[in-house]
Amino acid sequence: MHVYPSELVELITKRWNAASTDQSEGPEQQASTLPDNPALEQLISTCYQVSMMREEDRPVTLRLIVADPELFPPDQGPPKGFLRVLFSSTRSFNEYELRRLSPAVDFERSLIGVIPHPEKGFRIWGMLNSGIRWLQEERGGNKKTNQLPDTFVVHVTGPGMLTICRGLKIIATLNSGRLLDSAANAFQSKWMQKLFAEERENLLRMHEEFRSSVLYPVARIQDEFIDSLQFQLLKRIISVTRMSLHGGTFLIFPGPDLPDLSGENEPIQIKYRFHHDEAIKRQQNLMIRTIRLATTALGDINEPDKIITWKDYVELRHESAVYDLEEALYEQAQFVASLASVDGAVVTTGQGAIGFGGMIVGSLDKLTEVAIAHDVEGTMVSLAKIEGYGSRHRSVYHLCNALHQVMAFVVSQDGNVQLAKWRNGIVTCWDLTSQMFMDDN
Picture 1 (tube, rainbow, N blue to C red):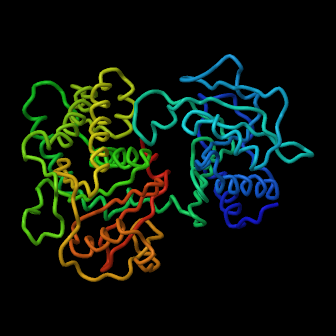
Picture 2 (cartoon, helix red, strand yellow):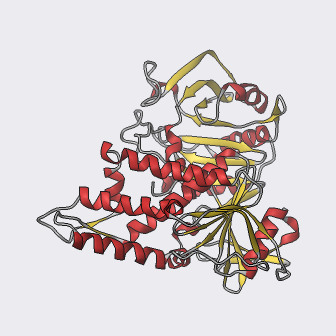
Picture 3 (cartoon, helix red, strand yellow):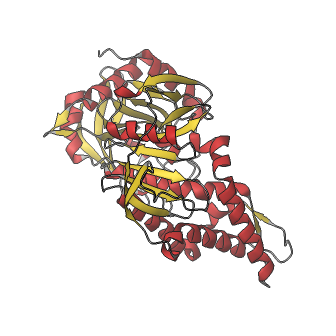
């Protein structure tokens, strides 16, 4: 058996019951039980070993599900169901068999099916074609997702990179030998909400002016709705960049006003700066249109002060009336993410992107270490020397040390994402897991 840190198995066991999911519309359910600890260690360590291999000079990536094939009717398939294909006889479960199968199992569309065997440990029974709708929670989209059964799923995403799930619910992530805690979700922090407070208040004010200017019923909107809308668009941009695997840097100046970065001694020199007109306000205009559509569609003449929540909108956006607007928001995210393909940073404000190809230059304060956050607010940290990071990360750390108002996202080519912000007297960094891009969609 491969040697593997017992901490991951302990974490999975601890979180398994807390990660139960509502899969009432998915395949027929079976008891959501974990394999015993020795079997679980053997399963995970095999996946870890295959993550370190290459197939035809390509990294091995795959998804694996531990489930009885009888859960999946043989006459179904994507986009609303799963295509279950059985091998004529089960195959051995080991890293070499997984590596050989991986080219035929597209990570985004299929899984390898595994079942426990009383004498042989685990056996591979076949393949499961899921389609790509499950990725909507991360990338955006409003079509109904076909739910996986509430069973043990492993994503192998790169060397030493495993994501452990219960169905679609992520419960643990291993990245380069480190356990990442999705509970330290900076998108849910009070400091980030405060960072966007001015922009949020501006949108609320404009909405109240709109309500008072029309004769038909328009509901009110919650602060939480605008928070969710802002962060969903931001997370879509980062997610698209992650999946493109070219990496990128995004520098965000919160607030509706454009930063003055035109001077010769500014720490950021934007090579491709956009002309300031209505075009660069499209991001803000799409958010205004989304608020108005939701509050108009759900307005009630008998309840003039009805308040619309984000949950109300999530249910509404499955209606055809919001398809075009959802597509517009997704295309905006795709457009901004594509700007990161050019060397340099994408620079944005609350209104939208103001330019790209931004080079971090000038006389920046010398910085030797940053704080790595272990909680949402960045109060529990450990210090790390910046010399161990690449030039893209180091330049962002120096910038955040010089401009305390900027918030930066650094997306690596392998899909890892780090958020950097000046907090509590030091540049503080959050390593973001996939779970943080899949919440609240």
